[in-house]
Length: 44
Image 1: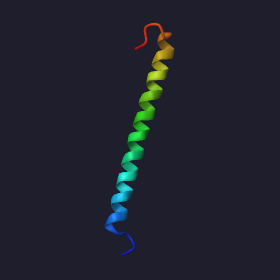
Image 2 (image 1 turned 45 degrees about the vertical axis):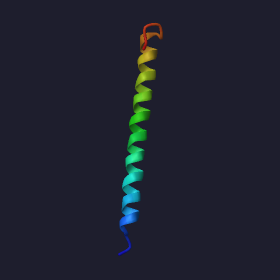
Image 3 (image 1 turned 60 degrees about the vertical axis):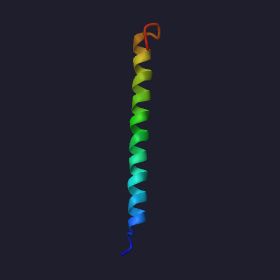
């Protein structure tokens, strides 16, 4: 077997972290777009 349980676990952790980073980036982008659309004065 070339795939050991440790490498499989590492791969899962890495993909989960990347998925969280993608969600955080998408949320930050959405907040930036909302601020721009609101003109910045009424943005949260």
